Length: 451
Figure (cartoon, rainbow, N blue to C red):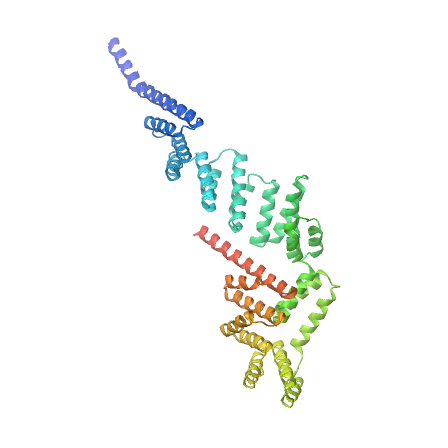
């Protein structure tokens, strides 16, 4: 009986431990092949290394590390597609193979697919264990999105990384920039930037200048103009100088003047009021605002009749000049129909010059006949005419394209050379257009995540 029990126990030991011994032997054999393959890789004997990696995999076919290193070897042999397939297999075998994600992220970047690189880096962040490394992966993601002008996709990544590194100055800066430029929560941006200034490294002057620019931007949009000026004064980086000028009273006044010349009094008035809020002593803004108020609100019926009588009883070129003034008066009063009637009369009398053509285009635009207006303005844009008439034709054409959502056409036109006032107005249009594009992309991206 005792003998039978002993035999049974021995059989049980064999059954239980033999597979373990066999597995250990396999692991040892596979690891030997793997070590040899690694040595061959260091010696740049890639063909021999590949054969040896394959032997390791034959012995132990579920080892993620072996597939990853085989993929790296294939990549060194200029067999990129095969390499990617092997590394993807490595990830299937082990979702926590961080080296595999990083390799594919780097490979995707080299191929020009930064969005795919972002996805692989995000997987490294999700499956990584070391906090410092995970923060590093997210920083790489955000920098890539900035590089390819897709910062509007950075919100999720900023939220996730700031949970791990709440006092990291660079992350605080990105968080504030996102609130400023994308979500338009300037109050939140201001509060974050004040915290960033407190924890900023005194040696990193470059980052501090970025922070102060965003702080000035936030203060400006909160209409805290004195604080904005104080923040902007701390920024000397050449990258920001032209941008800061766009917040100045001088630039905003020039933009208002450009809009005034194309009879967009609503936009001009809004800009002039902002100028006066920033710098109450800026007299040109007060004068232009008075001119606009007078043009829009005055009752000129009697003056209109007098001018019409004078024009009808005058000869060329005096009557042409008077009719031109009358049409301009009607556009100032947004009486586009009277302006169009007068243009039609002048066309019959062959009294049309480039100014009348521009007035006709503006009146047609006011009346909703945008395509007719565009055709006239396109002709004026390519004509050899005085710079002011050409510039306001170009500006109005860009504005119409912008309103129609034809952004590429608008950008092409608004980037044409123009004198200061028209250029400032064109730049203002471009800023608004760019902001709308970013908001639309952000909305689309957010909607896609929620579905």
